[in-house]
Length: 267
Length: 326
Ligand SMILES: Nc1ncnc2c1ncn2[C@@H]1O[C@H](COP(=O)(O)OP(=O)(O)OP(=O)(O)O)[C@@H](O)[C@H]1O
Ligand SMILES: [Mg+2]
Image 1 (cartoon, each protein chain N blue to C red):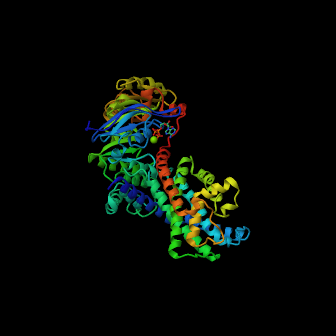
Image 2 (image 1 turned 180 degrees about the vertical axis):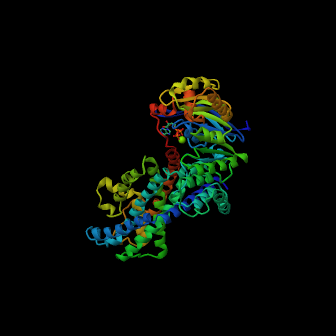
Image 3 (image 1 turned 90 degrees about the horizontal axis):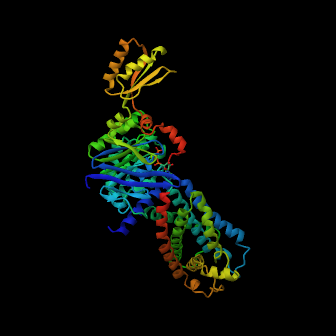
């Protein structure tokens, strides 16, 4: 087998180990799954009626934004998980084995996809319960979910890096909010980007979180006909734009994180 | 070259103002057993971590199993086993899951890893606990599981960092047996310990280090001789006879006879073990010196330090403000 195949093999073994940990400490799972339900309910009922989106059903508009925001938030979990991983005794065992150096990261980001699948599933059920509907085909909707998960995966490598950069696991949350809040709020997640002033509007239009949200909205058939898509390439081609970002994130943050992992483990 | 399994030259590692290793050299021949002996903070763990590729030295180089640790860490890792000072096991996994995971990461395949895990669980007496999370293991069980983890691939070179610290006497003997079995089978071993007795029991060569420097090396016997080996210690009943006891003991002593007026304790380093002890007792008897307690005591690590550095290990440790490494 070549290096890449071994890296995937080793990452897979670590992912399996993380899955066992999920089963053994199910309290974590509860936390992970309650938050999305809360997000959907809060936004649907608190903001649902009070933000004017121009005659469009705001809840319908909102749901893709909540999905995007929640999976991006979920990446914090990856950072925190890794920050804990490098402090555990088992890391010395990993590092004294001739395994791929990326294995712990590949395994962690992979097992966190499982969280995201569950999260999206739970949010969808909650959304359906509060009146959200998929107005496209099942296949298109699946494409939307898939894109959300792919984006979340790419973004989880950013948080992996952040998680390994901070000196203590407890700091991960604070550090990641600095990245996550602007990324998810200066976007078209909760308000149409044209409602934003000047610079913020440009930021929002080119923000990949906006693109993935827009793509999901389209995939779910939740883009109302009377709401024009802003005339920027990123939002006109949200799927392509999202995928470009995912590729960029991976190209930059996979090597950065692997290197930082080595350093963090040396501490 | 190939008859040397581990060779380190001029290893230096600094942590800020602390010099954990100060130009340390060491060598273990293939099939050899080196005991690295030293007190808390001597640099034992630092040395082991460098030799097992977990830590990069500031200076110096090391070759393990024929490969340079700096340039070929993967080749080194494929040939070594490590059981560190703190057990490198996953608390939330069971013993079996831990070993299977290590096996799979060592590329034994799923079946191979499972088979190996079963063998090791049996060998290390962990079958009953195999499917319980490690969280609930005792210190000794953890230690054994960790050693099992180091042996998954039957590595030719093994590093054990204080393998018996914290074990009860029975577990310690059990661990010694396991280690003897491994070395009898030809495994090269580098082991660290704070106990001269342990080095004596297990190692063929001993390197005493302190403050990151080698302060003595030799076989356990040579070392014990160097520090006065065994001591006859006795307590004289009548304080007035201390002088006479001292004279008697001086006939057998290799070094100065020490006396303590307060307790009546007279002691001296001797050769010849219990035979000498018998002679001493006879001689005292003839001279009419009645003694209370009398016995033969092995040199302790403290005495090694006393002799080699002129100060007890503990005192110097405290002076230097040395902390226990993480
Ligand atoms: N990560 C670290 N940061 C700062 N200082 C360190 C670190 N690791 C070790 N040291 C220092 O280096 C010195 C050697 O430590 P080391 O752990 O190698 O000693 P040791 O011989 O293994 O001691 P012990 O018997 O307590 O395990 C000590 O003074 C220790 O405080
Ligand atoms: Mg140590």
